[in-house]
Image (cartoon, rainbow, N blue to C red; front, side, top):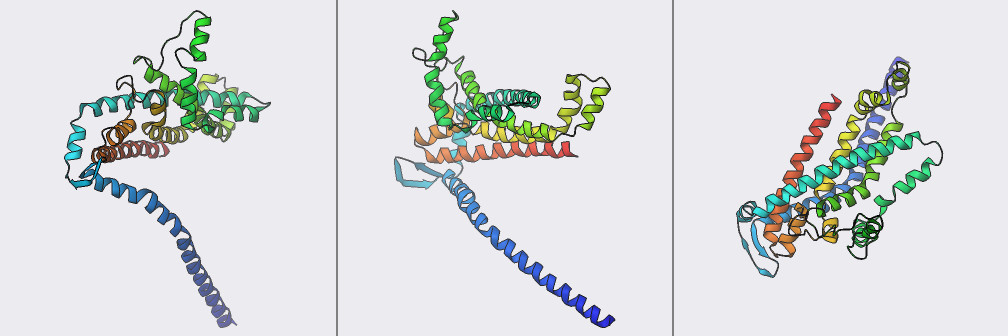
Length: 307
């Protein structure tokens, strides 16, 4: 009887091992399409960009493509325009990210206080995020038009006086930041709102009983609990802000002068204005390296927070 049970157990064990092996093969076969798609969509363009970055490739002379070694990188790095562009990108990212995080947290906290029609308010607040950036740019370009825009009209009505928001170098970048914040603060808000809903209530109830104020509860409970979510949100938005091109193209085309030219728009300028695809590819590689370093730093910070 014991031998029969042992034999049966071994048979079942062998059966489950075979099932597990077949299941593992099925799992690997299921991810093959995703791997192929990633190779086609991400890896191949990156390899092509690296190859283009070491060639002299003018868009108006595609048949005269020649090997150029690292000269494209040298020419890009010695171009004074890239450093002003980088500084503009850093200012744009820092200001927009700070405003989005603060406003997103405030809106999420306000939603937590609403008991009636909360879903309606959430749906309304998410509308800007659902609109294409190109459409957002066109809408705000019309609203901010110095002569026909409703913004200047209302300012003139109340006696403040309008101004050319997008044609003045002192306000153009701030205006683009305002439009960016208007569109993407709802994204931050919905993430923070989900985070606030998932927080345990016992520590907050205990803090309230102990007499902690609202500011103290936010500082010592809410923010520490949500640190990981805040870092992840900041990482996603930082990457997206660094890539901003569409709003700049629609609203100012990098002007006045180059006061609103971001790194992504600078790459467009190299490739489709100067028609130098070699330099554009080199700038793209530098951009990928920069974003990779920044992302690595933020995720390192996230791991430190989790520990």
